[in-house]
Image (cartoon, rainbow, N blue to C red; front, side, top):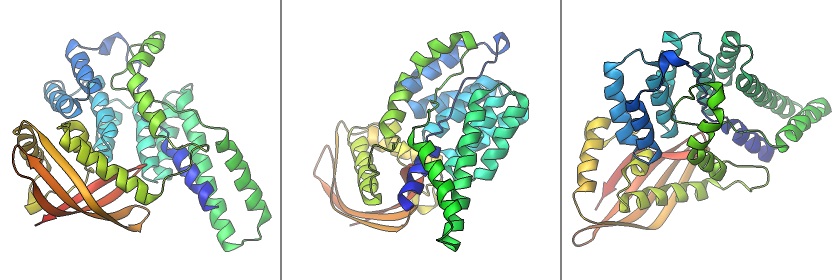
Length: 333
């Protein structure tokens, strides 16, 4: 039973943020937005968001720019910020169905299935022929149903009707769901759909590589945490700022009451200053509190154009969707 539920969670999580926004000629894509999208495709996501924020300050009612920002934030794991942006888009452009769909995806990723359902129903109301919203709504109903049947079985393990219905849902998800892929810029029209597919090749690859399927055994929490922490260290060593900052959750709390923005600027300066950085971890100890919270403690060896500095570090980790993110970072000698 638990194994099936975990597979179903993965299927729901694969409802990727979509961007098939057909805004028409009135919202034709500006050259500046194309440049920003290209920056993000090249891995310069943090810089792309900074540039996009400046663009939005000068064009606060540009739906295309706001939508791009929401997608970029979602891809970085900054889900609360992405929800805020997509909510703003729905308020300013209530007749567009895609922002409601994206909100539903983010709500589902947080386990807020009733909010997801309402968002999808609104998307369908604004655009009844929007097939993606219909498909995603079916997935949400299936997830909600599975939780209800599972609760029924907990209360009465002999309930064969609930067992049968749960098996039907299991069979449904076992056939594999279609995954709607994220993109960083809206398609100009339905006729350009094939072109937008090529723009999204990177996103397709990322989803295909990270998605859990019924044929791939699910990793344990310890394996996922170890991979997340090592990826963070590797990004730091490679001076890959986008991947480094993406390792930190939306609710990350910098030490000493420092703001997130000030902390990021300080980290950029310190990481960019040395010509070479080497970060290695050893004696990694993982303590999992529950399915969404954990603590990782390890010995860290840091070298930047000089002698190595050895510290003991503790990371407080939180799982958001399918990934683990750093919420707190504490170091001691």
